[in-house]
Image (cartoon, rainbow, N blue to C red; front, side, top):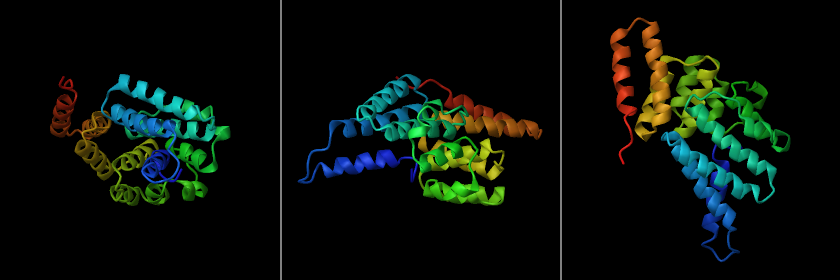
Length: 223
């Protein structure tokens, strides 16, 4: 898995190929691409029902090919969005299929779980190799800040937090990225970490300010 949306990118390229004189792109690729985009967006925006529906649809479309490695990759995409939102849970869907996944996907799954090995860094998505291989926490935070793709950036930040390597600068980066994208779920999660640290440091004013931000974000979505 060369970046966290390798499957999505591959499907997008297939869709573009449909405009050429070549053979038509199978419906499953088009349908899976659309559902992947929708389930990721729905999860990041806090819409659990839509996320579940679109994830099942994407998985079903890919499962129809019988290609277990692609189904495993769909599961990794889902788990990556959860790590970006600090939902640190087992990636059970991938675990059930890891015997049929390739080495890069298994390395990425271990990375998401905070159990990555130095020997596997070269197999990780290119955007996340620098932060994974950084010796110091400060260098890792800087590497995350340099990642262009917002979701990849939040995933890398989530892995560092899960590994106990999150600096204040990393938290600032993650909060700013989630805020800029309007992604409610990760924004609330990262603000929550900032508020906890402010409370632990005895900075009541900062904690209250963060709590006010969280209250605004938690307001119901407009109909």
